[in-house]
Image (tube, rainbow, N blue to C red; front, side):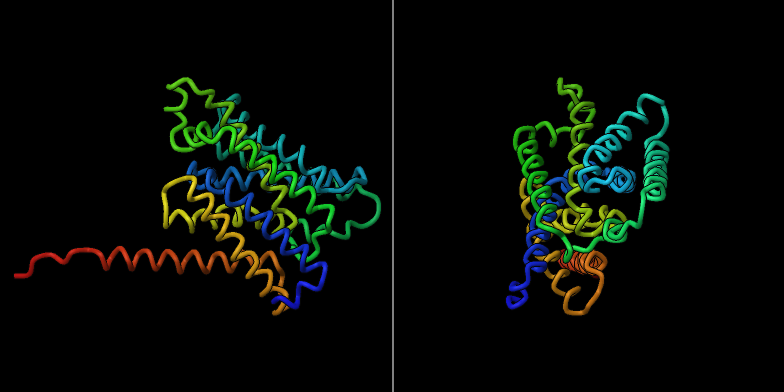
Length: 277
């Protein structure tokens, strides 16, 4: 493993693994606790419109994804309430519209889009230094906002109605939380791609929640789980010559099911046997 660090692309990949794990550990904990996994999937797929827009304008697609994904997050948060439609309908509409816009923008772009597949399915081994700086900046924004508004985000995540009753601007906080999800999507796109973003955003936190229900500990545990398994998946993908994003997600999924089975076994072994006759 250590001899691979002589290669710049591997060093960049490991740094990207750490950065994406921080984002998915912190924001993913809120996603799992608040049960907005489907909303996160809607934001990530709608962000494809931003990638297409970047190609069309001739700029770095990752930079175009940032405002596009933020607009998608706000749109999903407001559309259902303002238009009086169900959340899943609002998500479905904006999800498909974002993907459709992305396809049209790519089609209208001159020439060929060489890195399109990496944005769809991810390739953490090809993350350039410039994207690492963008990911670092977005991680910093996420950390600052969560540290400043931790109590408010926690209240909205566990019980939005109660947060409203005690005078918190729950609606605005929920929208801001969705914006954090959007920023996390941007961080994760290069690692696992739009198609697999929702898995990396939720599985480390889902594994961590099997061992703790304290939100702060969950964030730390999910981040550490993400770093360990993303790094392991990166190494496996290089050694076995497999797609990095898919390998990372499959490894996370295997660990999730193994952990779930272990927790089920431990729970059943602690049960006190009933009286015998």
